[in-house]
Length: 147
Image (cartoon, rainbow, N blue to C red; front, side, top):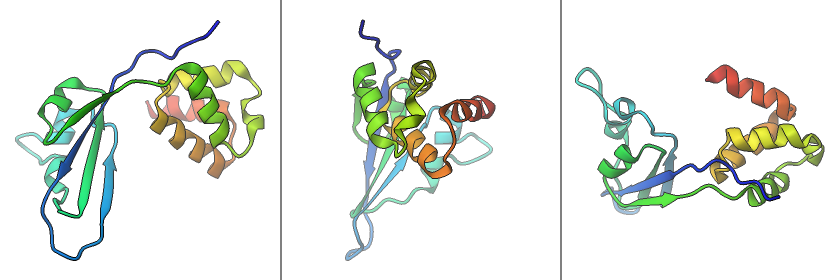
């Protein structure tokens, strides 16, 4: 039986602008823009969008799971879905230096559920696991502490 991750919409918007000529090309990804007050600001404080530069040579990509933010971002919005479970598990396996971390199928499935089978989340988790040499169970514990 093929198991799929929970459905999650991940929307990305991009913004281009003007900058000085001769500058090097760049890309900035601002991930998890799910809180409109943090992204756009409030009457009392500016939002993230107010601090980011605009440049002809650079692009800022915003990601969010909040459709309301995607609708009002400056730029184009692209709706991305989650990977299926099989592809997500394969991507996680290929991204880890120590495949032994995935011996426990239940823990691996729980991790993929927590990451909603989103490629960027899987890549970040794998990078953290590789760098810090901790178990998947310990990583899940850290995720729950943060929430």
